[in-house]
Amino acid sequence: MSKLMVSVSGVRGIVGEGLTPKGVMNFAQAFGDFVKSGKVVVGRDTRVTGDMMKNAVSAGLLAMGCDILDIGICPTPTTQLAVENLKADGGIMITASHNPIMWNGLKLIGSDGLFLDAQQGEEVLRLAQQESFALVSWDKIGVAVHYSKAVEEHLEAILALDYIDVTQIHARTFRVVLDCVCGAGSVMLPELLHRIGCEIIPINCEPSGRFPRDPEPVPENLTELCDVVKKEGADLGLAVDPDSDRLALVSEKGEPLGEERTLALAVKFILTKKSGPVAINASTSRATEDVARAAGSKVFRTKVGEINVAKKMREIGAVIGGEGNGGVILPDIHLGRDAPAGIALTLQHLAEFGGTLSELNSTLPHYVITKDKVALGNIDPQAALAKIQKKYAHENLDLTDGVKIVRGHSWVHIRPSNTEPIIRVIAEAPTEAEANNLCAEIKGNF
Ligand code: MG
Image 1 (cartoon, protein in one colour):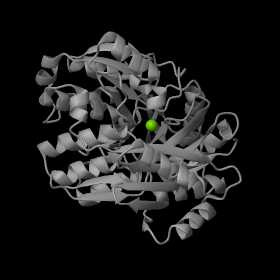
Image 2: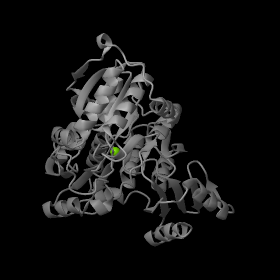
Image 3: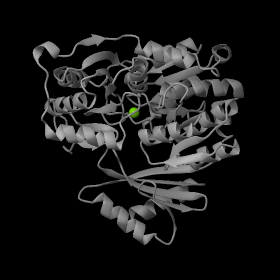
């Protein structure tokens, strides 16, 4: 796989194959043009290729006359928040998010701290493809400075939230096993847990970028975390992806709740504190929708992709939103998926609830989601989707994003990934067998 994946999420590729220093610099120059040689915040996750990437990004930006605020290794939401706080003209987060260790990429951020939307992303892509940049002369070359307070400012913003009561969380002294997969969470999350009075049992919290496991925080990759929670008799386990925008929870029994429950619990908690609409993507669990409706909130579904949810949230004035892959978006901090904020909400929720995490989880409606995928190979994704749409035309279809077939309490959603050469097949049903059968049925069409 040497192809470069270019999407609304930015650009991702395997380093040395699809992703080269020249290509990265080219994108940075295009972004420098897009922000009209303004001030750009640059952050990165811990990947061992991050330094090479940062140098290529810096060369491209400085050559276009951009000044750089280098905030170092930090979560993606920290970079987004820093763009907003520092009134920058844009931001670049160097990360391939949950992709494996050989990948890296760029997430491009606009002056409002939100990711670029499809239209803005296409403009940057067009500029990158033209490769004719108005490079500045020696006396207008940009200046790069280090800015070391971005993580601290993000921490303080979370702890200053009205509904986070540090004393109340502290009183429970939660024993928490924290798995940062040696990613960017390592530089922030132990400190966050420390400040809210948790007893921390860290695993994979060295910011080395040498991921000890597949970095996506899905249940099958969290066996070590689950084992340590059980062995230590901890209250819960927390796992994030390498750029710490996705959060997964493990109960005191050492059982992964599945990423969908992170958002469902956060929505349930926030709607006890304030009322207002909620925006979630088309693949997010029905449990989240049920919880929001039960609290009297209107629920809006969007296309998959953080920017699509964030823009809808801004439009409707949502009080919370996000994506079912563990991506909690809390507008009181910033309109971006934020695992550190998700952790604070989860622990406050648990402190107020008084019981265990598995008891809290059992207060949510029960559904099982099966997430499957089909490798594209020579398959044309649009043709495959058209075929499925035609075959199931007699059913209740939602075409917000790809094809979603809705059957009573169940649904199956088929859409090409924005970030990988695969088609995602996601099904939700009251039982695991029903969800698995739905995925198998759809996969039979490829
Ligand atoms: Mg991520």
